[in-house]
Length: 129
Image (cartoon, rainbow, N blue to C red; front, side, top):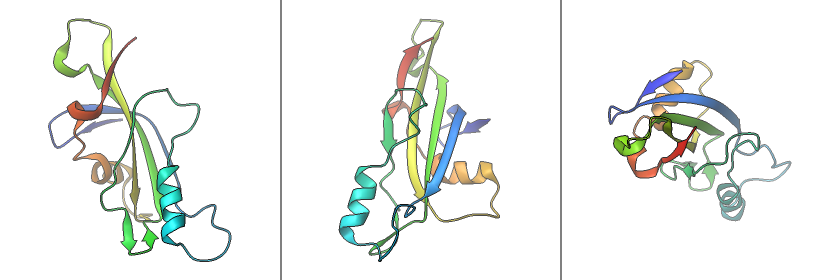
């Protein structure tokens, strides 16, 4: 699936994964310490490529002590940054963000809302295939 970022950069979704934010909280209520632990341990599926991973740390909370209920991970790829002369080069990144539950929202819209404003040239990295 291809997506167009607000910058005009076209990216390809290589893989997507989501999980409930508080899936491991068996009892009790979220606290600042629990939330910090969740944020500090955000990661992507182990079988994905070893590449740079960015956590979007804006708009993570529903309220003071409650994180948004869904953790989203997207592995994205595109043409090489800065159009280097190597014909077999590409760029990629994994982006993690938190969102509200959106069972009625189309999948493409969930992605665009989550990563549409992502600054590809600032964070993605080139690799050779």
